[in-house]
Image (cartoon, rainbow, N blue to C red; front, side, top):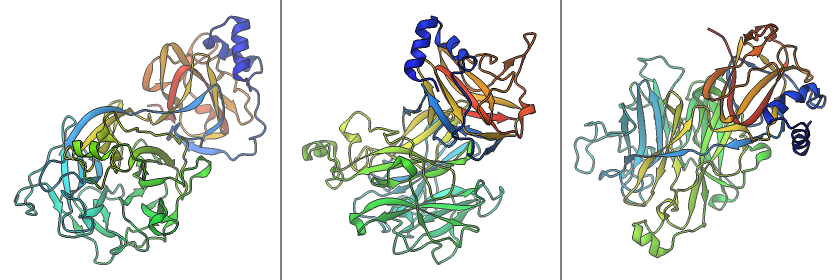
Length: 508
């Protein structure tokens, strides 16, 4: 493979731009056949979208790196300022239900109320724009208010960490279209269902899951990928509460009978030694075989504020001696997370109010909020009168990318088998940059007509652009149907650009 120094030397000797230099790689034998990975099994990706968030499909990078995205702060979308809410609201969930977004969260106005009837489950709704508003409900009277947005109360400890989801397995109109889990170590996890997300009923009196700590948000969903319900729950590793907050996983075929929880592992990326306070694991909406976890990383005893700072901000005295941020993990099923990036996905913002204990906790689920945009919601200013939910924005599929600078580079996949008829890429280039694609056989030899030198350069910033190759006579074609079912490798030539996702889709 061509080294960085070798690439720079070729550019210097030939005087060619990086764009032209990339087209020479195959012709000069600088990107040769693969041998070491030849025994690796073929990954059947069908026509599904694949994100470059880990190394699951990557065989070799030269001059290209995996780059973690930085979510952009889009401002506050909700403040927890009602008398039944307050500074200790948390464990939020955002669910897209058709055209509306539903926000669920724990309402808790005072410290020390965990697991008591001081906690309520509240809901807010976003139907247009980006602000959430409280529906006027009269299910419970709380804090002297007959009309409020409380959907569950008086069922401690369930409201401490009530975590709902929209069941992808259940048809519209079902009384069990929404499901939820909540509870603690003493109660176990109790199951609830709802037809509309507003009226909730307990599924049975007995807990559906027991034998773990559960003292955080325990998230569940129906997995189309694994054809079962999956729950990612809080456990502890080590001696009691002196240990490390960890994540374990259980599965179920019916949401009632669950397997014994198994602790998640982290592969080669590490991370088992860090406190993961919440995990927020969920199927990514555009590639549900990839589970995305935007987890709250808790740093106990890592103090930024002084007592005087906390007093000025109105931070509760129990909640300023630690700090938190968010990290990105992914999984493709089973009890393994890929921890490709050890650095923070979401750093605390400017201002001491962002450096308190249990702030910067992401809500469950990343949701699409525009044609090219998805949003992540984050609890901030915890234990303060200014407690709020903020929105952070990413491009669709844009958790991470394959990135190369102006010197250019290549990324080669493992052996793949696809069922689509054309290749689409989600990418962004500079005005001087480009992305090209080649299709090689399983040993790394270019398939005639599908080389980098044949590919029409992709220049621009698009969520989905079809890749085309020049044919004899100057015509172009993106038809790859002749290669369906074969073991191939994709080679990307990248110059001053990012590639976020790929898909061998079916042409229409």
